[in-house]
Image 1 (cartoon, one colour):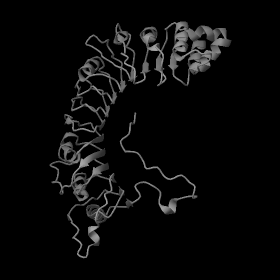
Image 2: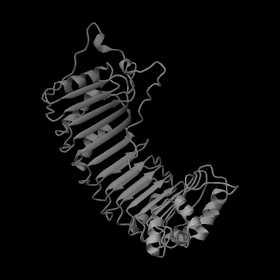
Image 3: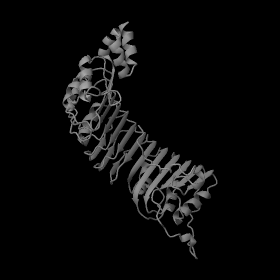
Image 4: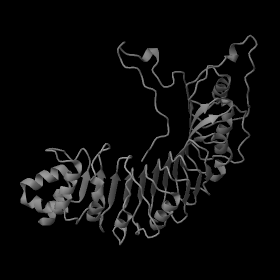
Amino acid sequence: MQDIWCHNHSLMTIRDAAHAACVSRAFGSSWKSYPNLIFNTRTIVLRDGMDFTCRVDHILEKHSGIGVKAFELNFPFFYKSDGYKYLHRWLEIVVKPGIEKLTLAIPEREEVNFPCQVLSDGNGSSMWYLHLAYCAFHPTVSLGCLRSLTVLFLDCVRITGNELGYIFSSCVALEHLELRECSEITYLKIPSQLQRLSSVHVLECHKLRTIKIEAPNICRFHFTTFHNVEFSLGESLQLKNLEMLCCRLLYYALEELPSIAPNLETFSIFSYHEVVNTTMALAPSKFLHLKYLSISIHGDYDYFSLISFLDAAPSLEMFTLNVLIRQECIDELLYKDPPRLRKLPGYMLDKLKTVKISRFCSSKSLVELACHILENPASERLALDTTGGGLRCSDRGPVNAPSCIEPRMPIQRSW
């Protein structure tokens, strides 16, 4: 019977479980082994002058520390107490064999170190999910084994590439890795022993200069930065979904990636500081399986050269081009003697069905690209959006209706 009470108790939210424990002796005893401890501003109601730290400390004093499956601690962002000094003791209570999920978020202004020793002695062996935010995490070679860890998410965490290596060596079951705004990483190596790693997101780690990926089974890789980065993706034969934001990326994407990641199916490119260029040479190899291609370009660019991308993807079904800066350009096509439109005959896109160009304007190279696509007999839909994603006059409602907000950049966090 006690097991049934504990199970029913575990299905409640932490607030409902606390209420039930106050009115029921059966739930009062099962509260001591309540499995899902989630502390944030939604679950902790601050009354009678008691602050966040006191509430959490009072609850954990009553808890036995036995049976905890998930522990989430999100300090209020503008927290002004010295409650962080209790952090080590709290983690020692709940991080024991059997814990599966650990989430810890600390306001960015605080210099708080995650106590790595709580993961030693087998305490982290059952953990499959670890999410740390706004803290320092400095594991060493003595880090406890994280053999069950499948999801690692570090958000604004102060950690180096070498320290990440210590984690990788102890969690060979890792499947999803996300690093976001980890400002101390300059070199990232993902070793070949991570055989089960399939999804990697490296977002806005602005000091990162080198990425070396040796893990063989990554099928999804998302990367954003505002600096030049040296890539080594190995032979990413399983890579099917690639999303990249980087400086002057188009040449690398066309010349190098087809041979490195030949099985890509979805490819999103966000390239900025691109410069005027001429049509690229044909890639030595092709994206034979690529079906969905999205290119966003920030800079002055010869869009006609993108025909080389289309030619490199004979299976392409959908193509989206986002012109992120629409220059005030002289309309060469309205000259008394307008220049001839360039053509590249013989490029057959027999599977390309849908094309959309956002922020389309009368730039000669954009018109040339559109004309080339129109000559494709397989095309079913070509959309030239001149509004930049906003509403057209015919789409507007009442005069007092709010204006349309322009959509955000296409590369977004997806986990």
